[in-house]
Image 1 (spheres, rainbow, N blue to C red):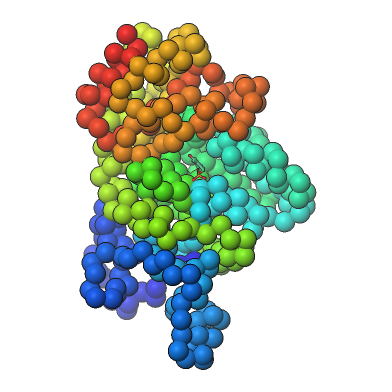
Image 2 (image 1 turned 60 degrees about the horizontal axis):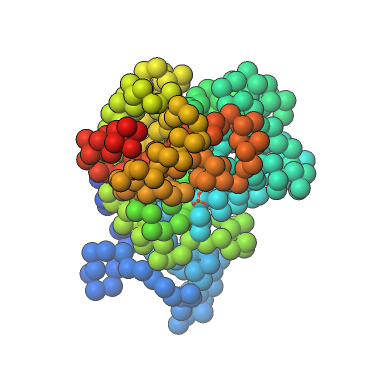
Length: 402
Ligand SMILES: *Cc1c(COP(=O)(O)O)cnc(C)c1O
């Protein structure tokens, strides 16, 4: 776990670096042996101390340092510091995967008898935690229609320990009003957790909108190169400490090699997201005029049902869109293989464009009947825009749809 350092006395008068600068520099302040300019991958399992008293002080958390890499590790800490700076949070802790971040947060902060409220459109794995694992430990779960604020607010007001949101959602890009629902949850004394994977801290900071904890699958945009799994949460020190303690014991630790790749990916996050925002917008507009496409879901489109909320709480609309093909799943089966500039894979947020239907990606864990109940049509295609030339991507889509 990583906690922000005390501010210097004159820090408030200094120029505050922008997210672009933080993406490049934040988290890497620790001096490195030999003057290396890059954070090294520290593979060491344990950290040695000649002085037993000092060892004990570190072990008790009274002095800075590392003891054992299941708990903390210098490379992992640098990754946590960078995300923490980008989310403007006092503390962060990381995990082996995004699902480890999500499930550890829930199991650390919820107890038998608690009530958790969420939306029907959460990520498929998250939905499984709600429907399969939390009920087993006697946590009551209410999954509300994502667009029904009345239902969410009533469920929260009935007594609730946690409101769990995801915005924009996967794969239909619904956007929920984080400030409004956080206020409702806080009136009921509930904690608010927001999955910010789709937006990234470049486009949206849930903590600034009122959330208590922000979670990420770092596997996606944060890493950005589809070569490392990871998860991270940010929030106030006391809450992050409770989740960190659960994770240090249950052991879903981020590996230092993965932390290094994620840290390197983060240095270009702002550049990638800027390109992906702009490309996704142009592609969404193009597809919305295409005769073979019956619907496009992208919060940047003025016709999107939640465009106003998105414009209020986001600085950019993200790199993922989805669209529906006339002809349903048969069309999906015929169009996807024709794309030349897209991996057909269960991933998103990488520098390459990635495409897939929900039945093999976000909602692979669900049956066709469950997907139908969640309002996810089988003719839907999720398209995660890479950093290729936008015109090339549009031409590729056109030839595949022709
Ligand atoms: C992928 C994803 C997750 C899970 O992350 P993993 O790193 O695959 O465990 C959670 N939430 C969202 C929105 C995702 O896209």
